[in-house]
Image (cartoon, rainbow, N blue to C red):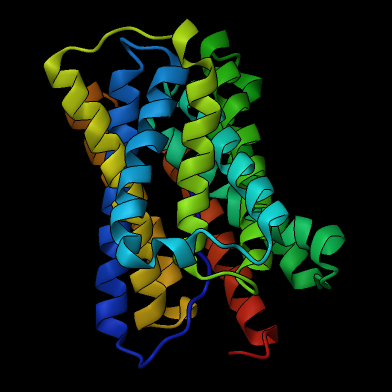
Length: 299
């Protein structure tokens, strides 16, 4: 549900970059699956806390002896804002994913890159041409087909879809801040701040929402945090080994894993409307990315 941002590449290795991105996608969907499973027993705040607390351990280990350097940000206010946005995104996503199928939640979150295009106008002062606006409208049409409010779905589904739309919007703002902060800090600094801020904020409220986990559920909570932290490390490697234009489209493979895990673990399978909406959202996202690449001086 997040993007680490571009990093300096020593040399391009497209195959390696794609493999790192595929590993990233697997980690993040596995994380979402574990959180959805844990949310059947534990509070929203406790599950979100576990994701950030154990991801903090990953960030500290990854920093190693460079930790004193990593923690010094050149844009601390921006890092704090970005980290709070990710914490909010994760919490709202968790609230939504426990009410709708995993593949549906994943599909709705695909709106984030499309919303970034819209938000880049007021926040980044970027120009968006008519072709990209058409892509945005097609993406929103896909979202309507996925949610289908005209069919009178159960209230739980609609409220879950609404939460996920909010999560997609929050995630888009998080990605905007990621674009800005990468000009000042290294990716490991951003990884450290997102993990630590999320852990601190959720820990403040944890005593009122704590339920002692079983031994197995402890493993699931630790696994969720490790998958979140390692997934971000893999994402950093993907952008280091190959251009974003090569690896970013492979993030859509997450829908395949989401459908598979949803079927195997939760007995969920996307219906035809979800697949159609996903096709429109993914197609529009790829088109917008292609147009942005054409207008980017770095591509």
